[in-house]
Amino acid sequence: MKTHLRLTAIVLLLGIFCGVSRGEDNQPPPGFRALFNGKDHSGWKGLLRSPYDNPLRRAELSPEKLAALQEEADEVMRQHWRVEDGILKFDGKGRSLVSVEEFGDFELWVDWKITAGGDSGIYLRGTPQVQIWDPARHPEGSGGLYNNRKHPSKPAVCADRPVGEWNTFRIRMIGEKVSVWLNGRLVVDDVVMENYWERNRPIFPVGPIELQAHGSPIEFRNIFIREIPRTGP
Image (cartoon, rainbow, N blue to C red; front, side, top):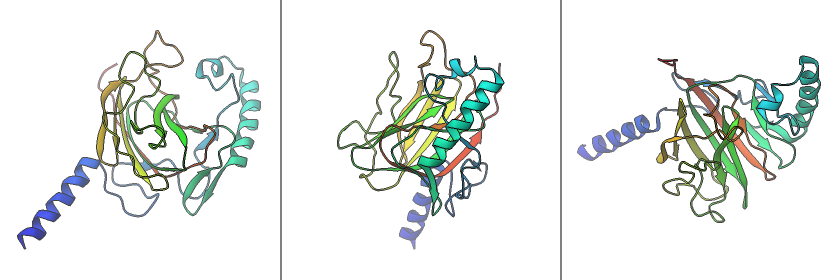
């Protein structure tokens, strides 16, 4: 009986540590909402072609030009990002997938699975990136803020599961700082995420979530977000 109670307590603590307790796939837990519905591309759009993959360049576009470029980007998206059995699957070609909504401070939960040699990432506020890659090629593991130059860019530990298995990110972003848990282990602890697009300025206050296309297949599911109200400017 005592052993059973201890195991139950451990399970509950793990659930608290991971931040959410999930049931069915693509069904958000309390306090979160789904960014991916498990059925179609609702809430997502294609990334504009270069050089308009840069948010600063996008901001310069006229509404008419932006609409035309977005139509082309969405067509590319539909060719290379498909939904199958509740999973968002990228075939390794085409461009990144972008959330229609933009976010400030938030907590993001997402499952991902790569193939051997895979390389991808998750852009926060439209900025690269929380790294995803094959730990056999990159022993430091996934979860680091890859494009940081001044602040730490590598994860504290390698917490990846073997290629072909599902991994889970919990990402919390408040202000400029990001924390990342990978499979329940803290790999990035409140680190400033630098602005890749404007190195001399802080990261943008708001922006979309992007699932990076980087030339290799990847799958995503259970993409949940909880927006965190800001208490200051």
